[in-house]
Amino acid sequence: MADQQSGETGVLLNESAGRLFGSFDEKDIRAVEQGQWPQAAWAKVQDAGFPLALVSEVAGGFGIPSAEAISLLRIAGYHVAPVPLAETMLANRLLSETGFDVAEGPATVVVAESGAFALAKHGDSWRVTGRADGVSWARHVDTIVLLTEHAGTSFVVRLKRGVASIAPAMSFANLPADDIAVDTEIAADDVRAAPSNWTPRSLKAAFAALRVSEMAGALARVMEITVGYANERVQFGKPIGKQQAIQQQLAVLAGQVAAAGGAADVASAAFDSLDIVAIAAAKVRAGEAASIAAPIAHQVHGAIGFTEEHRLHFFTRRLWGWRDECGSERYWSKVVGQEAIAASADGLWPFVVSVGSGQGA
Image 1 (cartoon, rainbow, N blue to C red):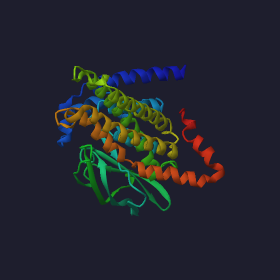
Image 2 (image 1 turned 90 degrees about the vertical axis):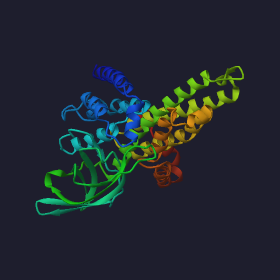
Image 3 (image 1 turned 180 degrees about the vertical axis):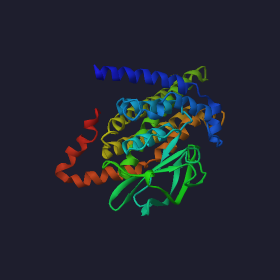
Image 4 (image 1 turned 120 degrees about the vertical axis):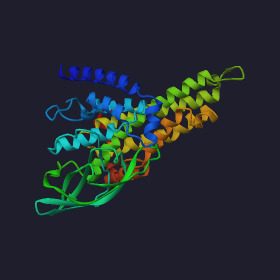
């Protein structure tokens, strides 16, 4: 019965998310791409409680399975919702698991390699130093969460607004992706030992899992827009979607969308266990799907698909940007490859079939 109730909650949550994200329009998206903070849009998201979807009920969250919570991001990706939902969801999950209160407003996480930040005890406080590039939404959030190591132990560091120096920048998706630098003392209460499963690499994988879900949603919308255009655009007396060459392209597009959806399912199911290899494989496959599907969508649309006025670029730029965030295809392919090599010849096939097998794939 608990599982049934949980599933029903997930359905209702997704319906609510669809209505909310569907209410955002191109003005909201364009405003963010011009550097504005989407105050009204974020207020709606926060009022709905979505930033707490990955937090346990005890800590004030929804208390639903992580896979159901992450499905919100597939819907957000479908609508290219111009808010830092994935970032805040992950930040709140890490904060709550470390014993912090959840963030009261928007938050983000720093995805950096080991050694990017240094932590040193300084009397009753801590001194944190380091820098990172491309931190999503950093200039707009109230809380920045990073994970670093000290004396062989991983620590979660909570940086409040104003602590970090921020140089505004934009990602390929034309969303805030700022460079931050930190060299300051912070209160002892803002640094806490992380649970053993949280390391710089597992944090990167967790963020990658959320990005895969967003990519799957955006790809589904790209296919919907492209099929609709192919059925509406008439050339030589019939819709171009009736042409065999276009139909073949649309079939390839549909296959990539389906593959990305499957990758999102694997990544979402692997989130709680932080199964890095399963998430790595999912991120690689979603990136490949974006690399194949987005060009097809633009080819079918022709010149109009490249114009600023047409909505297609909102989705394809997100896909190309998210493809390289939280670890590119090259990065995660290397992770999978190293694990395959470590399995040796005798263990290679068992390794291959084991990836994602425990995730309901």
